[in-house]
Amino acid sequence: MLKDLPAVYLEQGISKEKIAEKLDATTEEVESRLKQTAASKLPFWPRNKFTVCGKYEELGESWVRYGSLYYHEACHRRFMSGVS
Image (cartoon, rainbow, N blue to C red):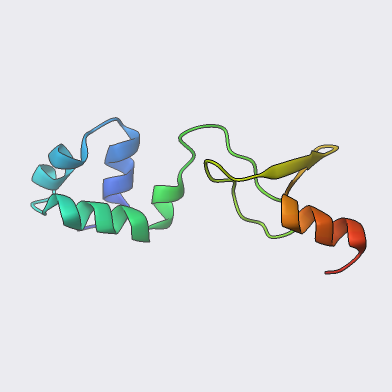
C-alpha cells in the first residue's frame, strides 16, 4: 500500500471502509497508516503553523496570536521570556 494513498483518498471524501476495499487492506491497517503518514496531517481546516516549534495546530490546542505569528501558549511564554 502506498503510504500516502489512504490520506489522499480520505481527503477526497472516501470513507475508511471504501479505502480499505480499494487497497485490499483492513480498516485497521488504513487507520494505522493514516496515523503514521505525514499526509494524514494535511489540513482539513485552515491550520496555523507555530512560529517557534514549527508544528501545525491540532484541534483543541491552546495557542496565541502575536501580530501575524502563532505560538503554542508554552512556546509564547518561552519566547516572551527570552528563553530559547
